Image (cartoon, rainbow, N blue to C red):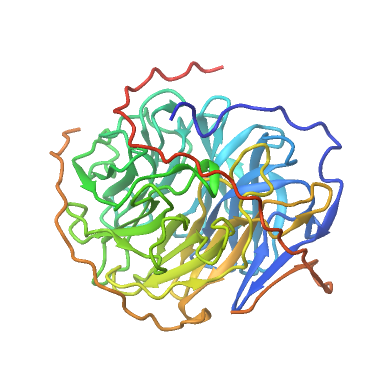
Length: 518
């Protein structure tokens, strides 16, 4: 990478150049599945001319009706100036409210939301001009947010992710953990911890191998696991057993090389200005036979063409991982893209995975959201189910040639709540469909195939471990709340685009001096 995924750009658009037009909000139905538009105005209407992507979802585990989503909000597609948009629902995703941004007029990006076991929501937001982040908290289901740490006081960098310890019996219960790409950091390091709910953050430390573009999770014993890669075909699972101890500086005692069956893609056909996928890591805390299993999913390219959603698992605390398993079950075709693959683990141990998929597109770019699940710890996966209408990811770009870098899901015992970006709405003044954020509920019982059919069982193999480091019928309708349904304008087939030259594995990186703070 020669430049960061996030960088300062245009100033805010002048007042009066956006939010002048509205149209009915989009409700897009596909078989059993209904996608509801999230980024709507105060009257529940679509805002014509804006853009929204990179949604991150949180669900109250004590009340599934309460859900919040954060996203990158572009008030006008003519500018790349983005803010920290957020929306909430109190009726399980049918009706959404978009009060605005965390800090209107402040250049923010890379939203990450999460929740604790009692239903408090947290929102990590990056200040693009400095690569510094801060944590916000909501105690009312995402309706209002309070900044926990002062602007930029959570350290951070691009791209940052965070998680927290939700196990009441854990030594580190309530601790928050954050890691980011060290190339573009606020000050130093790649990892930081908060022991007081995000109010203060400790001096960052380095992570072995400097993993990038990945996520982290906490096991029921308080052990912390980080999954990431090197921008190419190398991936790692990194463990800390003492991050849970408030009296110790976090260090990392296990680094395991993981074979994901391919390479990370930046600049692919379906998302030219961004990633085809990041590394998502989740830990099973079900308390059953699969308790503390570690799962990793990433959309990777096996041979330099399109991408597949690949899955691996560890049943021994991250010491070894299984051979990579291809979740998308369509015939192998290097022209097809299965991108933004992500996963979540339900309290009962079921694994849910969703991704965007071009398998049904003659042009290999028009995409649908697909879903699969596993009830045996990832050994077998259910046949894939399409859960959304098709859309063109190459439309609606807000002065950026991408539809973001990720989507997210949170699972419960009966299904999963998904936040994703799509281009179902049509903007007549631009002559294109526009990027918006959508919510859809997926579940094994709600799809065309209610009972999982086992697929081939992958062989579990030991992976070399590095020396421990000391330290149905598709219909789309646009509908205003409580008003008649209006048929959406059909999506035009895009002009074929030149496929970018596949990225080769990068040379070993020399860590640069962090950029000076403005």
